[in-house]
Length: 136
Image (tube, rainbow, N blue to C red; front, side, top):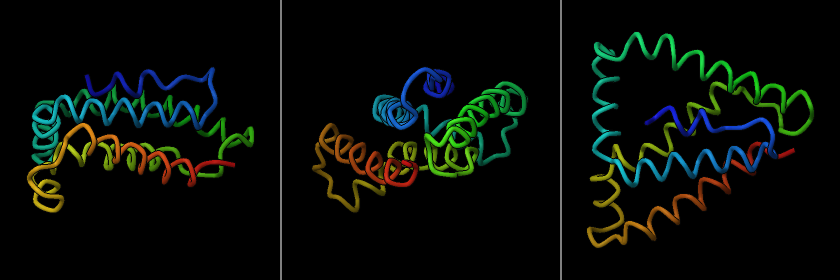
């Protein structure tokens, strides 16, 4: 399920629109599946004993494919120069943070956080930060 949002990053649309849609899909997964995200994070923190092969093969191929696409957008002048792998890593880190560190977020924002409003604010903030960082 965690690969599907990146798989959907298409080469036919506007790069900024595609990346913003990817961010939205990742946030939606984090909102709907926080336990699955935390389980995945624990697997990674333990050195990926179960998923290591998948990460080194299927995930690597997918990320390299999308990095090539992002590099093409940069080469075409459609995005500002940016390292595509690290852009993807930053999207992972920021979107999954909301699931993986949910307890910390609730402690900081208060226990009565409206989860839908909270994720809408997160999405708008991430879109603004990422869009301003990658637009040409």
